[in-house]
Length: 322
Ligand code: SER
Image 1 (spheres, rainbow, N blue to C red):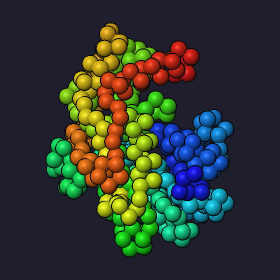
Image 2: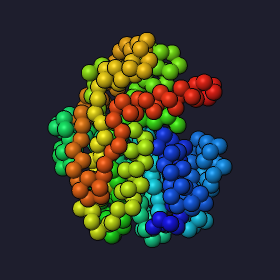
Image 3: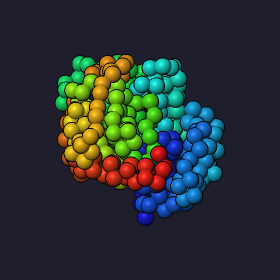
Image 4: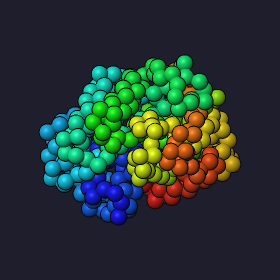
């Protein structure tokens, strides 16, 4: 039994939300974790294992209805428009990412939530940030996604300071996973490369081979999120902006790792507008604060992740699920 009785995950159909909802159901009980979806229907797995509700955080009334109906005492906000999609419609990104967040924070205050978890991202960094991003550093992002994530961190910390609300967040690096595809991010190539390696034995990457970014495998992402949720609030000096690192590699490193298991794999490069976004982000992050304040420690390195990704996606392909 964890510290919450009812958790609402907003954005449950997404890459992280879909797996985080299942992970939380394991910890807190299937009926105690509500999968909140906006318009994408939840997967069969999510639908059949526990409650789900249509909830768009931008619609405060709808959010309140769901919170009241289930007596929610913790909200996790996984809904966001990511870096690449955000550039096509920056105002939409601002609306979803900021108005969705402030509604969640206000509803959390009004209905006396025990906790709100709002992830942030390496997108808070910009070209002036040192390449191994310190915890405290220059935050001058060049994307609207980054602008909303910096603003979101400041807003969340403001609610902690001003109202005593327990809000927590961590700056996810690029997340690599094999259950739900990511949508609209710059780091999506690090997922696509594995699917294409299995399906076609080749991949054309939209960033250059020497592009190096901080990355993390989904099991570590789930662990980081659940560990931060469980951490003792009184021990936290930071709240909404923890750097969390796991790995740092170039696209060439990924291709070489795949070639160890699929020797005929071929990669080519056709950089597009996402190259500039990738170049504005750091190579790695210093996550000493997360390690010291709540014991963060990742498990996967590149080769361990490659083996697991190829195995899982290979099985899906054999069973014609992709
Ligand atoms: N994966 C995100 C993106 O590429 C970064 O947080 O936008």
